[in-house]
Length: 151
Image 1: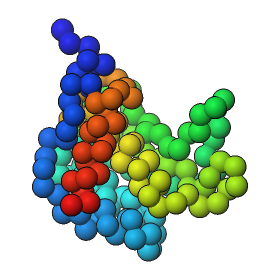
Image 2 (image 1 turned 90 degrees about the vertical axis):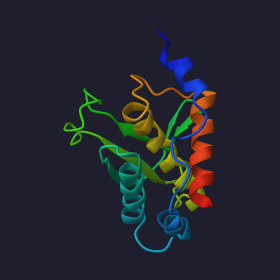
Image 3 (image 1 turned 60 degrees about the horizontal axis):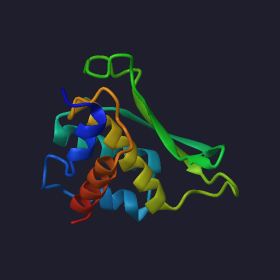
Image 4 (image 1 turned 45 degrees about the vertical axis):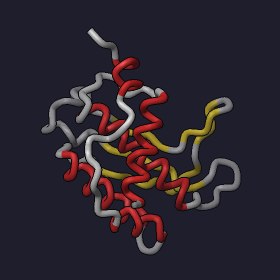
């Protein structure tokens, strides 16, 4: 049996190739409501991959420091990540302020964090991983999705 780490590392692309990048471009324009634009992008991606939708929460709080690491955002997964009916307790949380100066995070950094957290959702629901790990494959899938959305 193949473990999560090995499986995650072997998958270098997302399953689809064609995207309508309009919702991604709208988010990157940084016009309008970041939370609404983020939710629209995540809804689009969930629908496109036939994943259960996940709620997006933008916290107007500074990113948190844990030792030398800065937490940019996180995804909260329900106890049963594979039960599509159990999505009420699942959400993506993104911190909207920088850790040190408490200024609004640059939109590209913000969008990168959002896609990063979406990729965890993709790993759980599309790839059926029991743990979404930060492998080289995980970061390559993020890059692949960002390139396809921007095309």
